[in-house]
Structure formats: structure tokens, C-alpha cells
Image 1 (tube, rainbow, N blue to C red):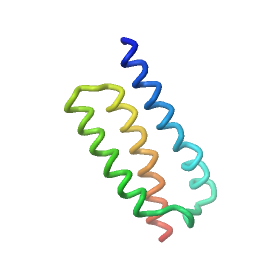
Image 2: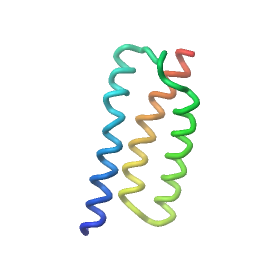
Image 3: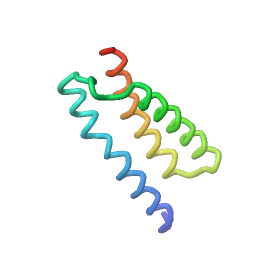
Image 4: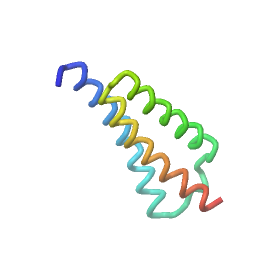
Length: 84
């Protein structure tokens, strides 16, 4: 892996793991009162487009980190919609 790919993986990893505290808190408390369904819907749609973009440019850092981010954000969105 070259330096640019490692940089991309590091950046993607940091932004992806930033969702973990929210997922854990939401999962434990089952409270989504202060979470915007609209924001998470748009965010998931944007992340899905990043995944498609990653495949189109064949960029492993973009693909992997956005798939993980999508999963984490989608969990929050599902919990929000279940509690709506």
C-alpha cells in the first residue's frame, strides 16, 4: 500500500469511528429523541453515493471506509425510525 492509500485509509478510519460513540449510546439507551431522521437519511444517501464513487474510481479507502460508515449510520437511522 502506498502512502496516499494509507493516508486515505487513516482519514476514512477516523471519520468512520467517530460514529461509534453515537451508535453505542443509541443502542444502549434506545433513545433517538435528539437525532434528526432527515439528517441521517440524507447522510446515508450521500454515503451510498460515495460507495458507488469509490467503486467507479477503484479506490479501496473510499469503498471500505464508506461501507462501514454506512452500516453505522444506517443502524442509527433504523433505531430512529423504529422509535418514531
